[in-house]
Image 1 (cartoon, rainbow, N blue to C red):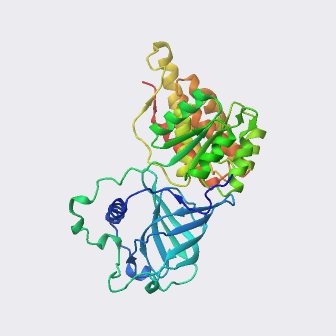
Image 2: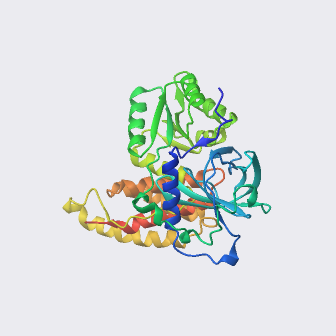
Image 3: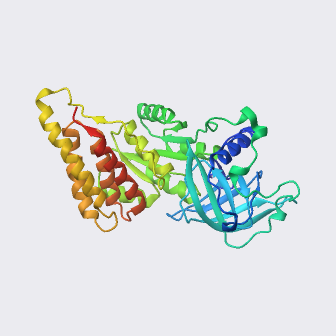
Length: 392
C-alpha cells in the first residue's frame, strides 16, 4: 500500500475566494491589540503551496497543506483543519518570491479552535527569517495587529461564519450494516465518508484519496484490522485512527494503541460515544464550550423515583467539588474511585451520559501513558455535566 505521503493532507479544500474570505473572517475576529514591542512586525501572507510537517507526540510525522495568514521574521500564522499539539516540533516549507521553497524549523506555539474543524495556529521559527525573500515589502505593508487590517473593501463578502469544511473519513468494517450506520453518524457530525469491507479495499482508497481519519473494525473477516493500522502508520498516515471491537479486554486496548490507534471503542456504541471520541481526536487540547442547559433524568416522570433522584442529584454536586479539587496528575486513584461510582450509578438513576463520560475518564486513566492535559479537559467536562443534572 502506498499512502499519499508525498502529498500533504489537504484539510481545507477551499477555492481561492473562500480562502480569502476565511482569512478576512479570522482577521476580523481579533479584537485585542498586542503591543508592537512584543513581537516582530507582521505582513499579510497568503502563500500558495505552504506546507507544515509536524512531529506528533506519538512520534508520527504528519504533513499538512495550510492556509497562511501573516508572516514575520519570527514566525507564521496559519489555518488548518486539524488540531496540532502545542510545542510540537515543526518544519515549514514556504514558497519564496523566486519560486523556490525554503524549509524553516520551529515549534507550534498556538492552536485555537476557530469554528467547525478550522484551527488558527502559529509557529515560532528557531531562527529569524528575512521576510523580504517571501513578500514584496512595497506591496505588503507591515501590520501591527490583525484587527487593524482594513476590511472595508470586503463589504458584504465577509461571512458571518467561515465556509463549511468536511474532512474525509474512511470506514473499514466487514459488516455492511455497521458500515452504513457509522457513515450515517459521521455524515451527521459533518464529515465526508468512504467505506471499505477489507484491507485491500481500504488500501486502495487511502492510495487514491487524502483520507484524514479512519474508523477501523478489529476483525475484517479473516483479516486483522490492527495490521491495517500498523501499515497505515508505517506508510506515513498521520491522521486520527479509531479502532472498534466487541472485545473490551484492557490488554487489547493497549495492543491497539501500540499499533498506532488513537482511540479504542467497544461495540456496541452510539452516536454520542462517537461524537465524544471525535471531539477528543480533533481538539484534544482545546477547552470545549460547555452547555448550560440542564440534564434531566430519564426517570424524572416516575413519582416513586423522585425522592431518590433528588438525593442522587444533590450528591452529584459534592462529587463535582471532589473532582474539581483532585489533581489529575497526583490524585488519579481518587478520580478513578469517583468515576467508578458514577459509571455504575449514572445509568441506574437515568443519566446514561454521566456513566459514559465517567467511563471515558476511566479509559484515559488506564492508558499506558495518561495524557494529563487531555484527562484534565475530560474531568472538567464531567464536573460540568454533574452540575447540570436535575432531578425534575
